Image 1 (cartoon, rainbow, N blue to C red):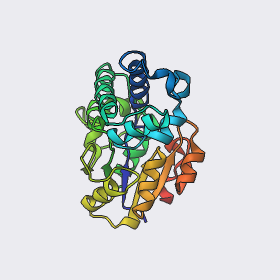
Image 2 (cartoon, helix red, strand yellow; image 1 turned 60 degrees about the horizontal axis):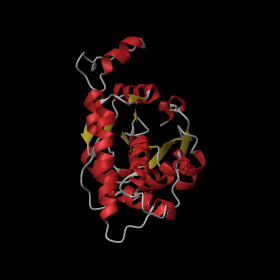
Image 3 (cartoon, rainbow, N blue to C red; image 1 turned 30 degrees about the vertical axis):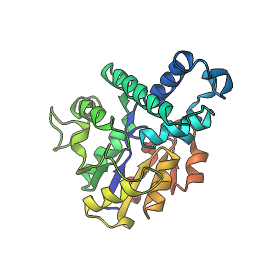
Image 4 (spheres, rainbow, N blue to C red; image 1 turned 90 degrees about the vertical axis):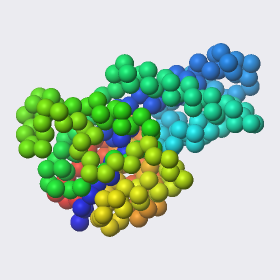
Length: 250
């Protein structure tokens, strides 16, 4: 029996600009500050794809994601300075995109979270991203409910997506990033629910592996056609949209 659901945010509830921010930043650096090494790397704009983002970067803390991206494209970083520069520039770019409103909430994700809340399940937000809360704070739920004729007593004109969660561990500095389960174990502990009664919702293989290593069941959301990667990571269910999930069967 499921008593609590732990949500990753980027790619699950919010169509965040993280993938775009990493791509924009890497392209800019290799055309400017790193142009002298560009020809000796494996990078080309067309080689940075959604699959690469999902497999190499998604779900990881920023610095680990940057290291993995540089390693994937064989961009040398002997002293770690390029990792730091990529992190710095990527954070600047994603803040620009968020301020521009270059993101939106997934409607199926909102319906799923609202339906769980109505049934009395406890909810937690657990994203590695330090930008997750900024996006959650900007999504108002009353306009969405009004547009879709949804009525919940806990929704007011001021209710934001971030307000749905009983526990929020987004963007914390954990000793270990995904695929280590620390972030999910912390969320589960704060929820006060046994591991076998917690369900994780993820869109990244690293996040799925973290959930499974923590002893929790996991739904993998394959919005970009990455179902194979999520199954290989160990997801118990793989869906293209959260509308496919039968909440009563959870």
